Length: 162
Image (cartoon, rainbow, N blue to C red; front, side, top):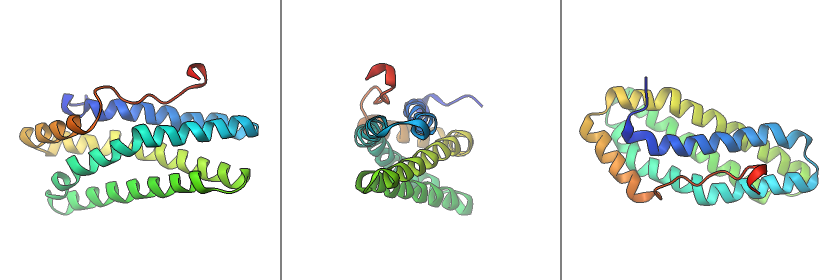
């Protein structure tokens, strides 16, 4: 199913989030201390400027609309909340880790959680939203999202852009 125009802004954020998740997966295992610290700083910066506002916008615009659809909606809303909380906790560990091994472990976990979460949202949750929510609900959610987020997504820094 193609993405509904009213969810495109979130999907564009998801693209940049997947870029970060892939960078962590590909670069971190062989990164020296300086490269690992740079990747960690990129992840923290991306979290603060891009992901955290995105998560807050999703929670505000979507959770109650999802939960209003019976048991299936409540299960999906619960999963969305739980995974957002896990991402927040993982980022706290990335920020507060002591020692390079601890920071690498935390960053690896964060990257894996982020990639899995984005894939679930795009493949399952957004498909469900498009087939279940009314046109009015999707429009209201979209309006709530665009008022909370900048026009363009915050791009994940890549080695070429640093």
